[in-house]
Amino acid sequence: MSLVRVHNFSVSLDGFSAGADQSQEAPFGHAGDRLVRWFTGTRSFHVTTGQQGGSTGIDDAFASNWGPGIGAEIMGRNKFGPQRGPWTDEEWKGWWGEEPPFHTPVFVLTHHVRPSIEMKGGTPSASSTPARRRRLRRPGRPQVASTSASAAARPPSASSSPPT
Image 1 (cartoon, rainbow, N blue to C red):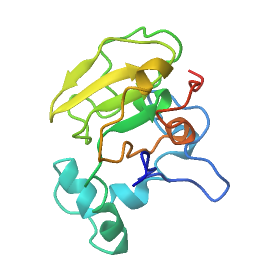
Image 2 (cartoon, helix red, strand yellow):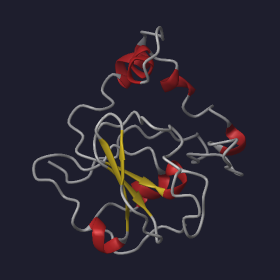
Image 3 (cartoon, rainbow, N blue to C red):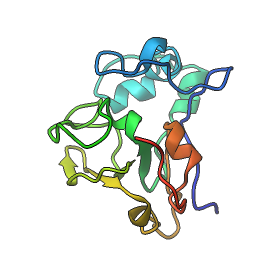
Image 4 (cartoon, helix red, strand yellow):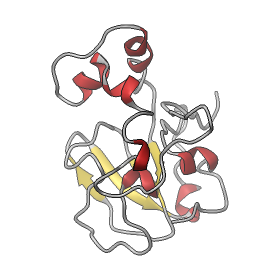
């Protein structure tokens, strides 16, 4: 079994996983939610986020395999939030707020370490520098359910960090 599995990763036909000009008001940049709309409209996503309804077609069949067997969510700094450089707001809990949809440990790849956060739903979150990433391996389980371009490009054993 592979140590790292890239899973739940949306990319446009021209190779982008987010639009330009990401901000707190526009988490996916100028592209809006176009890359993830197929997923957020499914019954599986609605259940994960405590909502009613959602589609039950082929997109839901794919989306329903989102979390089983995942050992950790490893994401780039942009997936976690709009801040760049040193952390200026340690109250920020990610785009999803107090209760993220991930119910596994979350590691944010960054050059700027911040204190770990314990969130609702059993989701601890920690920033991760290259040395810390080498210690993330959990025997017998894939290490990543990633929708982050920088995380997909640099698995936990990588020796360099993505830009922040």
